[in-house]
Image (cartoon, rainbow, N blue to C red):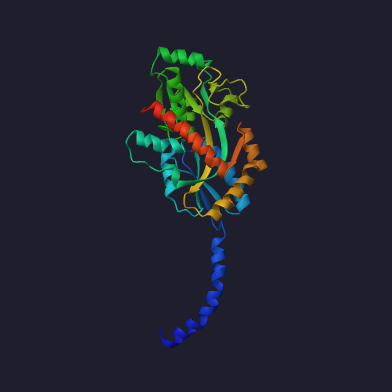
Length: 329
């Protein structure tokens, strides 16, 4: 640089320095661009059901596009969870995932595999849903009660196929928890998510699945599926005639498919605060409440501190269940 150019630059420095606080403030405004919400399952399952109305509500509240990205790489959601864990902690890649978040690393350890991610890599932002799992079979099946299914499975060990969202995903653990308690052996057929598992059930490829009420209600209302039992501690309002496993004598069979929003561990606290505020509005917005009610799900919103405590308690119970079940395919 020649002397004249240097002097021009030097003369401009005070003006540039005066603008720096404004530039920094502009960069601190969140969000300033599109947000991606990773759903580690295909469309049609509980995580996707939670993500889409919430994403639409967040768009209205935050004023920026929120894109739902179904990364259905299989492995019970482990692939998508790991991708979200590795994303930049800047608030522009979020994760809407299920209760299997804590189970999948434990399954990796159980089989001696490299752990794809750890729960500690995430910051909980808010819980959206916490539906009990329901056991569904085709309406054309001979099983009208849970006892009918158990008696048939005792006669034909390992022959009745059920679908899941992948090994040690939420739906797999629920079914194995039931099978272990009932003393029966079923045939596990894993899919890339609850949506494909439901399609397989409707198509006759499998004969049973565990799924959330919102996933099953339209098919039950159409007369295509029958629900035999409920993994919750109490009956589901949208399925008031369906007994719980606990009512039927299976005291240790309890499972919920919760869906919640997460960021990365190092996400700035200011962004977490903004997202928590936005989620509090989104989860109670009339549009979200109406969408969930239409499929028989009830918003089960929890803010970050309560959600973190809930995750700790629920994860301990699920990890103990996985250890009790042991290695299954």
